[in-house]
View 1 (cartoon, rainbow, N blue to C red):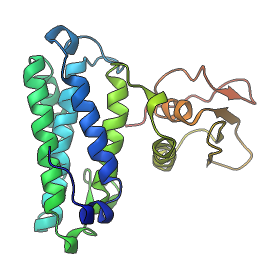
View 2 (cartoon, rainbow, N blue to C red; view 1 turned 135 degrees about the horizontal axis):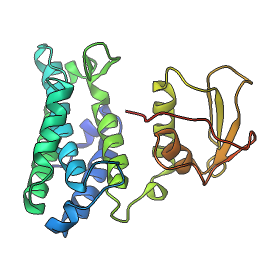
View 3 (cartoon, rainbow, N blue to C red; view 1 turned 45 degrees about the horizontal axis):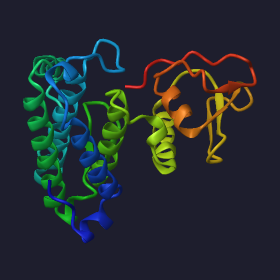
View 4 (cartoon, helix red, strand yellow; view 1 turned 90 degrees about the vertical axis):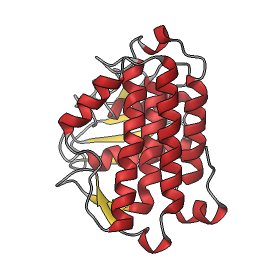
Length: 242
């Protein structure tokens, strides 16, 4: 897979981290058997094949946004939510070899599209779907980094949230907390990094403490939060993030 140039890496936030995460994920897939890819992932109802297929189609979906930024012709990530789900389901049962080839090829296409993004178009606004918040095209590598790191952990192949960097945990918590437009008030404090996040009305919710990676895992709706503590003695009920 092509690596980004120094100039492009400076212009595109988290591009180097995205390439590193992509390489790490592809390496984790290298020895998987058909039985391995058909085994359950940590996402309810999804096998590892579902997760790998999702990551491949997600890479292509981000290419759609990059082509939008380049051409000016509006093209959201997916034609529809239904088509996205259909494509994931259809691809999930393929052989481990075919899943690996697809994951590698799609990751390569995304790196190429990022490298080809003209500097004049890096600030062009794109969006995941109609009615969702816009963001500049140069932030696509950051969005892809989140997909790679979270879903690598979802694969349950020995790489988990404890392997995330402190920087990534903070990035993820910032994004998840900003995306949650409704829900219980709370304060999150990371005991290992000193991070601090507030959500909802000040003073009207519990303070929840734990490692940054465990806080991030919980606010995404993964796990039961048993590694965390709350001064209210219970954790708020949270829905699944995306």
